[in-house]
Amino acid sequence: MTSPILVATDLSARSDRAIDRAFELGRDLGLAVEVVHVRKDDGHDGVSDAALQERVREILPEGGAGVEVLVPEGSPPGTIARIAKERGAQLIVAGVARFNQISDYFLGTAIDYLLRHAEVPVLVVKQRPRGLYRRILVPSDFSPASKQAILTAARLIPDAAIRVVHVFHIGFESWGVADHVREETLARAESGLAEFLASSDLAPFAGRIEGVLANGEAEAAVGRAIEDYDADLVVLGTQGGGALRQLTGGSRANSLLAWIRPDTLMVRLRD
Image (tube, rainbow, N blue to C red):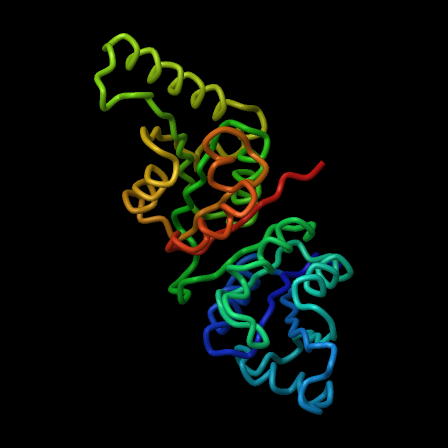
């Protein structure tokens, strides 16, 4: 059986965006979509599993005919990660919404938990779907984590163009830096980017990938790159180093997800 896409819903109106995006990806990739709504351990106001499943189906496209709907009990983040593993899902899709009245569910501790424990990428949907993803931005520090992020994006979104942005920083530039220092720093960044993109792993997708450089502090530089490219999906490889680690390390993932406007795919480096 082909690995499905697993989408989580809390039955709120805002989580409809994640539902719609998951089904759009499923149609484009020819993959089944399975829907999970986690009910708290103390039940769901006496609602039976069958009735709760019917509530979920009411918010699915075309009534969700033939769609697998799961309503397990437990702690939402842990249960979602467990279900994704049990079902062999290749992607978890989640929305920025409340989940069982826990504020900022997918921008709080739950997203951190999923990134640490889920064995597949996590797509955080923020925008209302207006068509397939066309312009993907991937910040890269040339680490294995950022390469895996590019490869995951290329395989998962097969028709989108991918712009890889490498952020470099010329120290004390505002104080005045000698021309040769600026030129040498830029030359190293250009050489590193060219070598990274020439990797044999990325060769099959070379026609879809372009590389650009951005000078400055990591968050500001990535923010400008998102706007310049009008990216509709940002892909982040976690456990990277350098500037990328500044963006994705530890609790920084929360603040990053909070200010990035487009949907964001988080890809954790596997051992």
